[in-house]
Image (cartoon, rainbow, N blue to C red; front, top):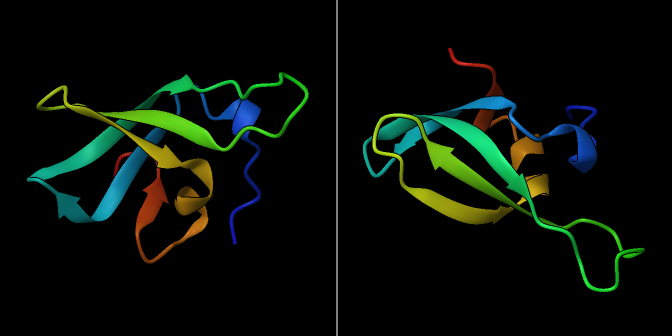
Length: 73
């Protein structure tokens, strides 16, 4: 399991093990702050580098090494 912290994910690069809608390389573009602010961060926005399409995912999904690899591989 990767030692990740949601506040350090902004602008990090990720590679999908299985391409998502023909996109393989992603960049974390936003860490969505919860309401109330003292609550734990749960959601992030990732953007495909090639198509510029973005989607919101639970940041804990990035810990799953069968789905994601850190960096652009």
